[in-house]
Length: 114
Image (cartoon, rainbow, N blue to C red):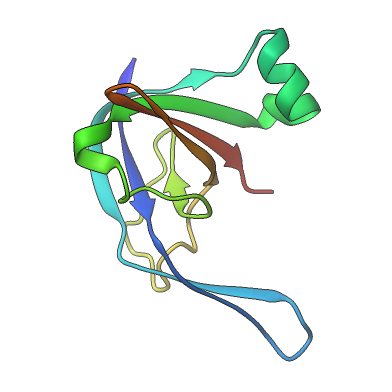
């Protein structure tokens, strides 16, 4: 099933006074018609382990998103969106784990935020 997703780009990484990560994200942008897939198979299990239960992947056109989508960006998947969000990225339910060129496509792995 094709769906719309949103990506909030990571602008700046930092830490607060208690050494907790505090990151700043940019305004989310929409990508329409994305097919999200769950992870399965021995190769992905070997690489990600039990994390595959909380991950998704998608193929996106490289010409449009190479260098635009990056690891650690936040994502809004499965019907989540940034509407009425006061701080960019605060309603995101996934983060981008890895982005891999695959010929004319990018393979993007998302991991659910706990």
